[in-house]
Amino acid sequence: MSDKMIVINSEDVPQQDFREIPWICKFDGDRYGTNNFYSVHWNMPQPRVEDTDNVGHPPHMHKENEIMMLIGMDPENPDDLGAEVQMCIGEDMEKHIFTKSCTVIIPGGTPHGNFRIIESKKPWMFVQVQEAAERTEKFLWDYLTPEQIAAIPNKDFWKDTGYDD
Image (tube, rainbow, N blue to C red; front, side):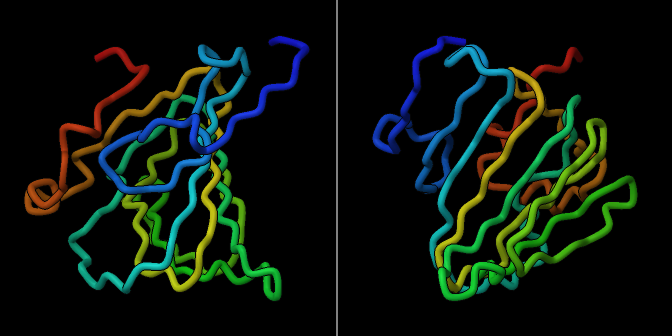
């Protein structure tokens, strides 16, 4: 890595996928010579989504550890995420609901997903770090019903990365 400081502004980050998310940064070792994959984006207020068939980010796993930070932006109450976020983790896809600012560490090879925002009352920030220079992701479609798979918008976007078939 260069010994010069790198500054990335949000206007320098192209749209990352089909979702309308205000990205702050998303880069890996190839782009800036870093040791980890990083992704940072805002989540803005949005109404409650009761659709339980909406799986959000489908079940998957990574070769390496993943660190996710859900950060509330209310300076009067930084512990309040200002949102309700669901994620399932482990072989049994145990459901967890996050409403407070937190850091989630998922060991490499651990199934997780159905990451979906149920509601955002206030802006909050999502930070993701994978402990590898390149992102790996293997989707676990067997964790979903055929109806859930059929309901995923833009299913072709969710492709295995960094895994040999």
